[in-house]
Image (cartoon, rainbow, N blue to C red; front, top):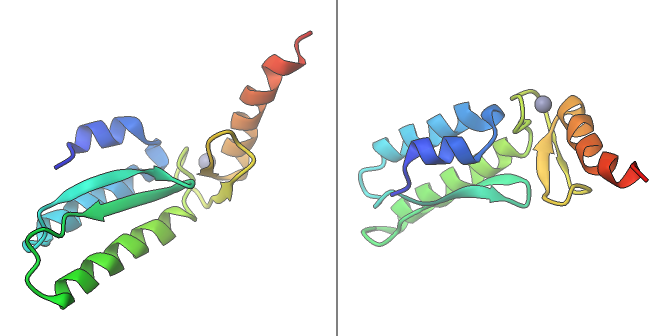
Length: 116
Ligand SMILES: [Zn+2]
C-alpha cells in the first residue's frame, strides 16, 4: 500500500484531485489488495492495483477499466495546475502540462544553456 501523502508530494498539485479519486476508489474495491503502483509514466498517471486476492475475471476487468480510465483522464489534466493539458514529449521527462506550465517548464530547461 502506498501512502497517499507521499504520492501527493511526489506528483504535481494539478493531479491531486485525481489522486484523491484513486485513493477513494481503492477504499471501495474490497476485492483488491490495494494500490501497488501510482506514478508518472510516459507523462500520465499510472496506477496498478494488486490482483493477488482476486476471485473472478470480472474483478480483473474492473481493475483494468479503472487503471485505464485514470491514465486517460491524466493525459488531459495539467500536472502543474489542473487545467486542460497535453503530453509534452519534448521535455526531458514527459509530462502532461497546459500551455502556460509547459512554457514555464521549458524556459527553466533552456535558460541555463543560453548563458554563455
Ligand atoms: Zn498548467
